[in-house]
Amino acid sequence: MFYDLNVFKTAYAMATHAGQRQAVISRNMANADTPGYQPRDIEAFYTAFENTGNEVAMAATRASHLHGGTGAQNWVEYTADPSGDPNGNGVSLEEEMLKAVEVKRQHDRALAIYRSSIGILRTSLGRA
Image 1 (tube, rainbow, N blue to C red):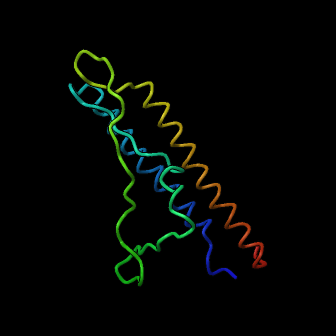
Image 2: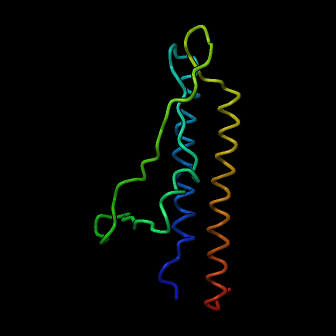
């Protein structure tokens, strides 16, 4: 009955994606004054999973876990469009701040899905 709960795997993947994208955005902001630096971003979550089908590989969080990969999910990172800044830097702090807010919302959404799913699971087991 509870052997394949993909909603938890998806919520985990959403939260992981948001965390990794936030790291890229913060790196962009840290290099806002670096001459020649071009901003980077990570592909959207729905783009990364639209062609994966229903199969989600198991992940091992410890070396003693069986049948799971220990590697982190590698999201496709790309260079964003360059801007016309005189020093060749393409980072716009305003755009990066908006992306950071969007990523926070995505992470909050993933946590809300996880909490809701846990609540449903507990209710179905009779433990409210």
